[in-house]
Length: 81
Image (cartoon, rainbow, N blue to C red; front, side, top):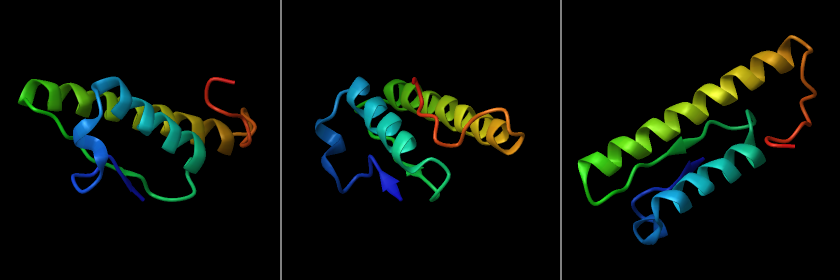
């Protein structure tokens, strides 16, 4: 699934709104489907900042899945719950 792509409304989203779209998608989709998150920004600094946030969330989801596989976390547990 692709989110925050160039052909969507991402151009009118703030940094925080783009980050929230990513959070919601990861909470809802989890590991069910691959998640591809676009980076859209007016400057290369802002694009790099968004890319770093997306890397952080990817790592969090990898750790979550490893905990589920090890039986240390309920797979139905929601992020932030």
